[in-house]
Structure formats: C-alpha cells, structure tokens
Amino acid sequence: MSMENILPPLKEIPPHLQTLADYEVQAQKHLSDMVWQYLQGGAMDEYSIRDNREQFAKIQLVPRLLNDLTQGHTACEILGQTFPHPIFLAPIGHQQQFHPDAEAASALAAEVLGSNFILSTFTNTDLASLKQENPYKWFQLYWQGDRKKSLALIRLAEQQNFKAIVITVDSPHTGVRDRERRVFFHLPENMQHPHTPSHIPLPELHENQHPVFAGLMQIAPKWADIEFIIAHTDLPVILKGVLHPLDAQKAVEIGVKGLIISNHGGRVLDTSISPLKALAKIKAVVPTDFPLLLDGGVRRGTDVFKAIALGASAVLIGRPYIHGLAVAGALGVAHVIKILKEEFEVTMALMGTSTLNEINTDFISQE
Ligand code: FNR
Image 1: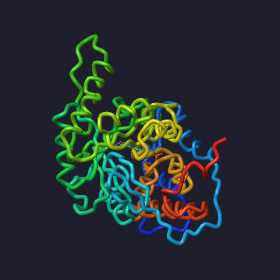
Image 2: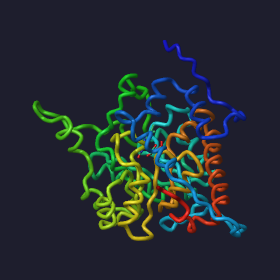
Image 3: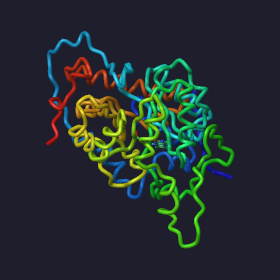
C-alpha cells in the first residue's frame, strides 16, 4: 500500500498559481512519486535539463521604445496555417498517468486557447475523439518498426483532419534515466493505447547478438524511411529532435517541411546542445522561410520572445502543461497556456514590437 498523500485535481484555480513555476510546485502534490520522477526526470546527470533553462537566462533583452503598437497581434503563419499565437503543446505520451481525462483535457484546453496541439503516438485518447473541425492539431509519429505500420497511423491522422505529421527522430533508444530506474518506473498494467502497443515489439535476439545494435537499431527509422513517408502522404512532414545543421540541410533536401529543434526536454541524450544554440546554427543553413520550431525549457513569455528573436516560428511547451493537467485537468492546462501567452504579449509590448515578424536578433544581447 502506498503511504503517499496524493491530492485530487482541483476544481478551481487558487490565487497562488500565477506562474508556470507555481504550477510545477503544485503538480508534485497531485502525482505519485513514480509518475513525478517520470515526468520531471532527464537523461543521466540532467545537464541538458538545466541548460535548457539557462540558455534563456543568458540572453538579455534590448527594448525599443515609443513605437506605435496599437495594431499589434501575436499571429503567426506556418505551412500555410495561421495560428493566433506561437505557443504550441508538445507531444507527451501516456497522459492518463497525470489526469483521468488525459489528452482529451489537453486538447480541449489547447482548442479554447487557440494553441496548436501535437498529439503523441502514445496517446491514451483516440485520435478520432479530438474535435474534427479544429484545425490546430498535428500528429506526432514514433516509428512503428516498419513502414506499413507507420503509414497506417499516418492514414488515421489524415482521416481525422490532423494538419501535419511530426516524426520524432531523436530517440531511436530511450535515454538512460536514472530517476526512473530508482523508482522502478512502469506504466499501469491496464493502460490503453488505442492505436499502438505500449512498446514497439523488438526483433528476437539470438545468443551473442548485441542488444542495442541488433535490437532497437534494427527497427529504428532511417533517412530512406522518412523519404518513403514524404512520398506517401499529402500532409507536410516535420522532423522533431534535429540538432545538427547537416541533418537540417539533409531534411530540407529530401522534402521535410519544417523542423522542431529539441533535445527532448533533456530526456534522451544528456549534454546535447541546447536548442537555442542549435537554432542559431541551423537557421544559418536552411532557406530563409523554412519553419523552425523549438522546445525545451520554455517557461516565461520572455523565453518565447528570445526563441523567436533567434529565428523560431513558434515554440512548444512540454512539462508545464502537464503540470496544469495534473493540478486541474483542462482548466489547469488552459490556465498555463493563458499565463504564458499573456506574459508573451506584455513582453512584445515592452520590447516595442507589434508583430512576430518584427522580432529579430537586434532585440537581444548575447555576450
Ligand atoms: C515527452 N516528450 C515526447 N516527445 C515526443 O515526440 N513524443 C512523446 O510521446 C513524448 N513524450 C514525453 C513524455 C514526457 C513525460 C516528457 C516530459 C516529454 C518530449 C516533449 O515533446 C518535448 O520535447 C519536451 O517536453 C520539451 O521540453 P520541456 O518543455 O518539457 O522543457
């Protein structure tokens, strides 16, 4: 029997929840230690988790004054879609662990706040249960071990009116996550994933075969698989987790339509380059208008501004909206998005910028 005293989700938002950091503190009270370590943890020594925050603190803002901002707005255009603001929800798997309403609650909050929702392959909620006519939804694909199974998931997303396919390519192997190992992290036995098994089945290993290279690496996607997917769907394909400029160039060459620059919130490869640094390097080698999105450590409206200044079209938040979900379901997720969106609007006003197009490196100091 667990001795943990876990609070049920709140029905209204108390006044002490004013920032994303407040939500993080509160969320721990609503989750078991095992789920908390899974959510918060990262790979190895968690340098990347810390760097993802520090990358933003190192950049300073240089505001312009007295501009006319009366026509200001936060809208952005990506791949022909116009979004009311550039704060998207990152794909996060198995959301039933955090709240019984799971992805349905996150999707509802995203819809109400006009936030683009990227649904994880490991959703506990059926793709079909997200509102059909809502245009702000993309589907994240984890490679299913072969082309046929991967394409079958994409077909489902197409049928359900998802507007883009985000293929996460940074985790052909799970990260070495010590915190999870210490608490014997496991998913609940009866957890349902309507479209996939909870784990992609591994090839059978014979004696003396290498568990990594003859195991997971056999079923990991390769560049030719991405080309195959691009050739077999009309939806734009975006790669998530790209950090190297040469991979970015290669992606552009084969017809990928956008990149999410990400180190998976520090969960996969510790000490991997922080996304903002990678963004600057990648921005320099892709076509001017090529959509680059960024995630990892975005916690303040000023962070959103800095990412855009360095060339991001939009940002994604991961853990923060899950904190909102754990605290108060859809209401909590909506409040988290609202906090960040309003902070970003105030930042734009104080920076003297009236549209996202005006935001560039002239507004930041990086010494
Ligand atoms: C993730 N992330 C992730 N990414 C993905 O492509 N598919 C997935 O199913 C998941 N699942 C997942 C679960 C949990 C618990 C976390 C914390 C993260 C990575 C996620 O999309 C995103 O890249 C990071 O969360 C961004 O960093 P922040 O905002 O959490 O700092």
